[in-house]
Amino acid sequence: MLEIEDLHVKIGDREVLHDIDLTIREGETHVLMGPNGSGKTTLLRAIMGFSGLEVTKGTIRFKGKDITGMPIHERAKMGIGMLFQRPPTVSGLKLGKLLAVTSGDRAGMVSEYARFLHMDGFMDRAINLGFSGGEIKRSEVLQLMVQQPDFVMLDEPESGVDLENITLIGNAIARLLEKDVHIVNRKKSGLVITHTGYILDYLDADFGHVMCDGVFRCHGNPREILKVIKTSGYKECLACQKI
Amino acid sequence: MPEDLGKMSELSPEDREKLTLTGLEVEMKNREGSFFQVDQEIRQWTSLNEGIEVLPIHEALRKYDWLSAYSWNLVKGDKDQYTKYVADQPEPRGFVIIARKGSKTIYPLQACLFLARSPVQHVHNIIIAEEGAELHIISGCASASYTKTGSHIGVTEFYVGKGARVTSTMIHNWGEEISVFPRSAARVEEDGVFISNYVCMQPVRKVQMAPFVELAGRNAVALFSSIVVCTPGSNMDLGSVARLTAEGSSAELVTRAITTGGTIISRGMIEGVSRHTKGHIECRGLILRDGVIHAIPEIKGNVVDTELSHEAAVGKIARDEIEYLMSRGLDEDVATATIIRGFLDVKIAGLPNALQAQIDAAIDAAERSGF
Image (cartoon, rainbow over all chains, first blue to last red; front, side, top):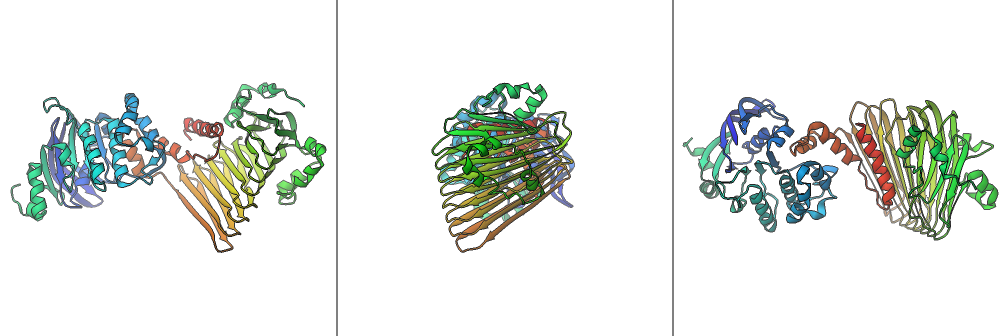
């Protein structure tokens, strides 16, 4: 599904991602952990194709195609979707209007998804304007459910969300990633940034990666990695010489 | 009384289309009254509501002696060269609308002021909503497709009685070399509500206006909204002035301005004269192509217990907003247009659906033409 090879990314004059290799196959969910400022969000933004950063070396391939220089909307159309940790407020643009534009042949499903996420009362509200932390994340997940991407990137889906909303969001994300589908038939893949690991209760992630200072310091079982981080912090990862 | 509703349909298809874009219903569907003036010739006037009278001003002044006290009362004839020009006319033209006590309109009355062959069109309008009346007016102002130059000077005096509610929606569709100088003022009595909307999405050489409202009665409310797109060569000097004279009164002045190369000056002034008054000015401007948006919000408080505020923001569409929508699959042009459409999408509380739909249609037309 996604193959990243020898990726180097600069922001301004500073290289913030170095020598990144990552392969995510169809049906897999990967978890990305790491201290604040280690480059996790930058990696997601580079995969989505946002401006403000520059890929100086390496390639990003999606579904077998090199998308390294492709515009954002074409990547989205190919099947990449992203849940933003802090999405911008688009004042004036109603959530319902955006969903009407993006839903295409899934227009009939918008109401059902909105009810599922308790967002049916938000259709006439400007996107993210005055939304609480939980409402922002529910709005993000709703947009992704309407978009139905094949590869879902989730940037801290549980941050700023209360426990009740985490259950709701966790279940919705599990639907997005086809966790209810037998592993053999599962097509959707994901890359999830988490600090707390709460979201893993809903996702059954397959692989975990730790990023520090723009490089991967560990790959392995996500729950094992999380246990080490919770016990010893990231210093254990920094000291680790496995990779 | 001439009631030939077909008069407007005598216009060319092109001009009918121009009028339709200003919200005029040539076939009078969903309208409770109408007034139609071409240059200085009043072609048609009618009211389908028994509680509401629509008359040409010269006839109204002849018919009602008391009306002279309302004429040149809120707008002074010597205010400036434009009011003086209108006041000096031996044969005044324009309309008078009187909504009798307790009368209500469900659908709006429409006033069409059409500039065809005269170099100058002048109108003087008086609108009176008596106690408890509810009146909705849509004024569509346009010039004929063959009219390249000219000026329109319109003086309008609004009297909003105790507990009355008046909405006035003005949609302009002039030509590139037409200059427009509306001069209007309103007085709102106790518990009265005055909602004034101005929409101009099409080229115009110059528009200059600063409607004034005095909230003269306790708890009177005024809301002014301006939604404009200013094209290259256009110059719009738009303002609204509200004086919170009575206790408990409030005013809100909202502007959404886009320039694609023209110059917009957006003024707003609220003066809190009495206690327990509130006023807010909001001006947001988008510069899509090099042009000028100059926001000048002013607030002046004269007493304790008046709460006045303003916010103004001028700039371009934020890149992160465009890319956010692109990440949902919209290409850059569609993402940009979607944000612009949202920017202009001001829903005006208290405005009848038919009039909101008319404003939306004017914006839709501008959106289709790529702003």
